[in-house]
Length: 361
Image (cartoon, rainbow, N blue to C red; front, side, top):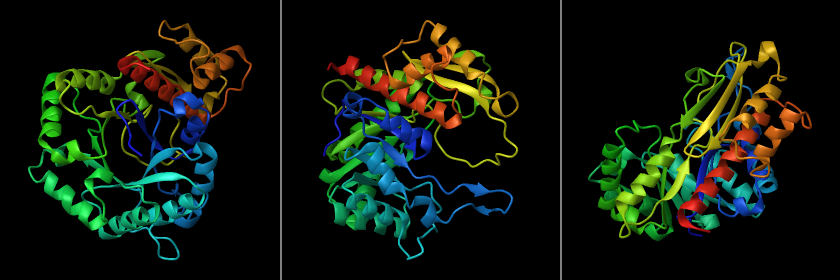
């Protein structure tokens, strides 16, 4: 089940907005998409100062929901955001439980591992691979890839997992680096890729990164163009690598920054925002906080998006269609999860189209 350089790997939190975005993609776009799903921790109750659910309750519906939203298409599963001490009531690691449950429903998941995983996590990944025989994904940082011992460290990890390099996908995750000066970063990443036998021999090589703002406070609004620097960088890197070096698969964090934090929603007043991917950037439209001013303002925000020169028009994506419908009053104004699926769905569709333009159909 190789992931090819013409595929796209969006890194998505497994939350309602994101899995609704995946479900609503057209089949043509789904066929070129391999999502990396990050399992988030249970929501935190800041009044009781404890998780609102047990880990068992939190992930109990994952397998059924995954099968309903994504079917039997391939996805990558990462439990790295969970507390490393978290175990199920029966003692199983969450990664093992999730893979077993999904596999029983016919889902295709590849577990994601890291070089610094603890023993319990690594053991769970090994058990999952032994059952599903899907191989594993190594997600590494640029610093790890630049370590002269990188290939040795990869070999040690794979031996512990009982996996050969030919059954391992490598994700070089830049996260959110300093994208400028671009030439300097290209030279560093290119050197890391070309120096590694693991990256050249792996089943697939995936390059991830994001330039999306870490906070909407960085967006001054009411409309702002925000460059997709990871996409600009990826194209420039391909030109530098040339034809003799393996082409990596493109990955990003869609319409989110990397990392994860839980906020006390009693104290947070999120703004109405629409995050709309366009050529080389995003149109970000920002309203006022929805707690005090409601979701009706999304009609005006939608009109601002559709009036922009970068708007790609009706029929481009289900997300794009929803924005037009909201502007015209033919669909509701939704809630925060609605606008997460709208933006994520459109973004994934746009990147798949970008890759088709880059490589040809």
